[in-house]
Image 1 (tube, rainbow, N blue to C red):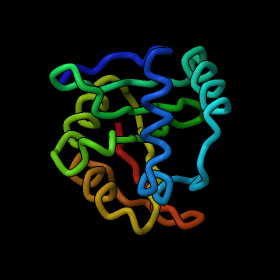
Image 2 (tube, rainbow, N blue to C red; image 1 turned 180 degrees about the vertical axis):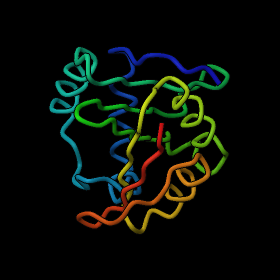
Image 3 (spheres, rainbow, N blue to C red; image 1 turned 90 degrees about the horizontal axis):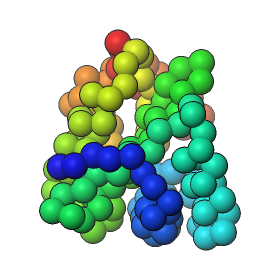
Image 4 (cartoon, helix red, strand yellow; image 1 turned 90 degrees about the vertical axis):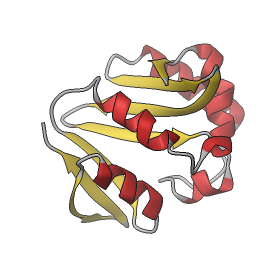
Length: 141
């Protein structure tokens, strides 16, 4: 797998993955995202020094994105291209991305997102409690 910084050329792919019904159901914001709103958000995200967007590729195909948001704590989020789910790519993508960040890293996962819960637990994230219907996980430094 190749893991690289996202570019403007990735914006439409990420928006398309975000529109997937399962992705939306597991998101904090389950509504469809307007394309123009997403494109503006993506441009701001690329320019934000406290945000990192990484794209994973296998054999030249984009298989997903990992996002790190840094503030008082670092939070990680993953979105696997729906065409590549259930093939182990999420594990490889998140595992490799985690090598690029130091310190404590948090993730918030919807209570009923069993696949993501397993993924994060396999990678050493520890359950910390519930908040607003999401399970909070910590991977200590």
